[in-house]
Length: 229
Ligand code: ADP
Ligand code: ADP
Image (cartoon, rainbow, N blue to C red; front, side, top):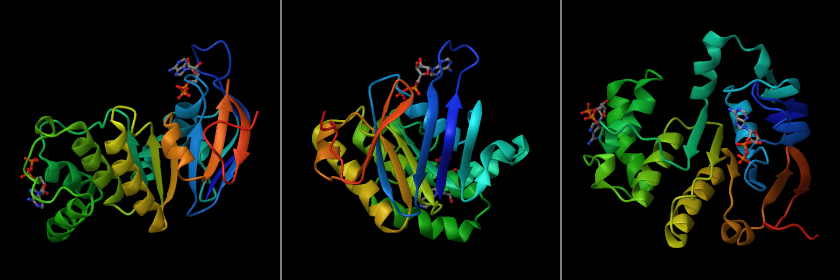
């Protein structure tokens, strides 16, 4: 599903590679925590999968498609097959809760009657029934992140990428968001989540991939946040 072969990525302005010789394979349906200190390359790895960046060398492939080979005009099409959740929510401030989620379906051309039924369904799933017509600035951080998760999952993406999705949330709220991502994963969506939240990782013992200085230093099937050594 996701494949990186000997991937090195150096930003034009960067002196050292942000990722160095990273080889990684993630199967369909897996849940992977991506851990490592700030600056270790976690976001860069996620950006490569979104084709926001291209690898300097090596192969990045999604579903057998070499992302470097996708022409720029087809990149939006690629991104529509990937759900994204970020630390800072990134909602459209001038659209309601329902409008934010509907937008994700509108851009992929779903008919209005589908949008009308699917949006309330998804908002119910994430616990936001009754808040359809609020604006993002009328919601708590945790609620805003629920909208972001709803928007990421509504198109039933095969892959969901989350970059520090609980970074701005308190522990109880973080656990709620984590449970939503678990639920998305149980529907078969592959989830890759970059995180600094040790409690969430340790409570689950899922696959953990650790980066340090752009190098993959650990890949454990039932990992904890901190490695053994
Ligand atoms: P993380 O997500 O683990 O905090 P990043 O992938 O953001 O790490 O960063 C990895 C390295 O790449 C860091 O050294 C960072 O300073 C550098 N970096 C990130 N974005 C850029 C950029 N746009 N230009 C130059 N260097 C960058
Ligand atoms: P906004 O003010 O957020 O832009 P709009 O009324 O323009 O909201 O609607 C944008 C999209 O959101 C439309 O496609 C519409 O079908 C959908 N939408 C708006 N409100 C609801 C709702 N309560 N339930 C389901 N879909 C909604």
